Amino acid sequence: METKTTHPHEVHGFDLVGLTVRDAKKTIAFYRDVLGLHPAMTDERGAEFELSDGATFGIWQPDEGTYPPGWGVLFAVRDIHNAVSAMRERGADLSDPMETPVCFMSFGKDPEGNAFAIHQRKAQSG
Image 1 (cartoon, rainbow, N blue to C red):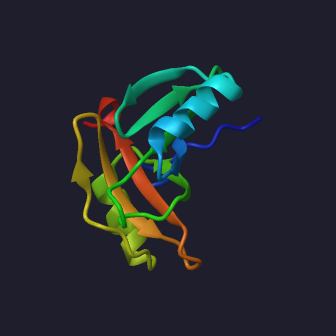
Image 2 (cartoon, one colour; image 1 turned 180 degrees about the vertical axis):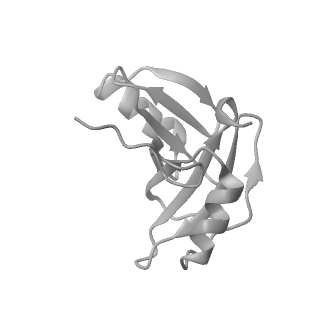
Image 3 (tube, rainbow, N blue to C red; image 1 turned 90 degrees about the horizontal axis):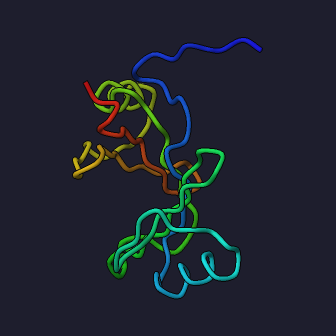
């Protein structure tokens, strides 16, 4: 199978697939206690579950009214600023990249209103 090389501004995978929820504690307990997932990180607003295949599943409780409950995805890129610029040129409506202690993110919505993020882990930053 041929491996495709991606440019720094292209999506090369998923960093996280997850949920925005109204009750993080209740939802985390379901995925932990009923489905048997083990959280790698938890706090009062969410959790991340690192699965054995390398995928990450996340749960996040945003501030009231920020995001409706639902599924979302963080698309992995190697260079957030170049990726956001290239995607905007192709018609994406994306927020300016924001920095967290562990990553950079830019938020957008597809034509159906589904939220997604362009995401760069700091371990991959230059």
